[in-house]
Image (cartoon, rainbow, N blue to C red):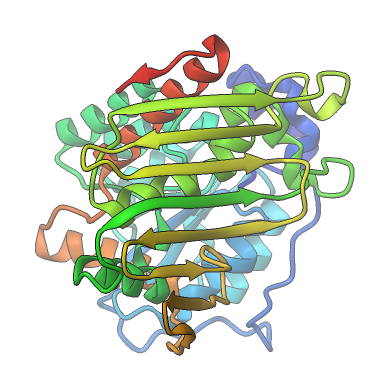
Length: 385
């Protein structure tokens, strides 16, 4: 999720955004596309697919999201927005994007005149989501934005209001809500396979290393990232508790542990443990961390059985286990392309004039809860929500 790459355009872009300290966060060479065997343009059989403009050509966009378009039924890439002309030209050649549909951040607003673009997909650092959502809406384009939705609830509301005013769709890219294993877990819980759900544990963490991964540089700058591990990773645990229970929490507690002598955590937090109490009595215990080896799992405990998904929110691999008094059993499911499913859902909502499954209001709910968790960690008190 990088705003720009060439030195001059980086400096202009970040000066305008008041984020010049983040220059190193968005540097780096283009990343090879893992699913592309040749450099010939990607071909699309159905030219009636909706056109997506990709805003931000960083590691995530190149390695995970853009290759998923090959499996889309209703979506294709028709424009690129980047501060690096060389990177944009290379990727345009890979994906069959016309030269006239390559934009910089300076001329982004002229995308309004491009009829080939129906949807703008914002893959920038969190602190830039609100600005580019509002600009895309003013250009008359539907918006799909990465999560977390924005740095603050106020920015989330601005995004929602701008899209409503422009009469365009706004969707937040909660990919796990389109992933087969997570959808299967939800269905089993709703059918009562676990009995009455009593509690949930959910853990997400990885070691953030800005010296080894340029994409991590902006993640430790509060103005760009909004926060630390809670915003970046804890949101997966938080959102999972909400879609697994089908409820909204009414109370949160939290504890934070960050070594401020560590330069990574001068502006953002490292570890947060937080609990959520739901109206039915379900209790959820969640963690997020920037200083522990990678984990992305949850377990749901019922009075008849438990369900474990580990990893739960991986890009390509998931493992489900269900246990009860008779033992444990592995659940065999076919992996699906969650990115393509997400992109196609956005396209279908535009084509059929439907409200997205994960609209701006979904993103706003998580950001409000994240702010409550931060308050609970800061005050050491329970926070009603």
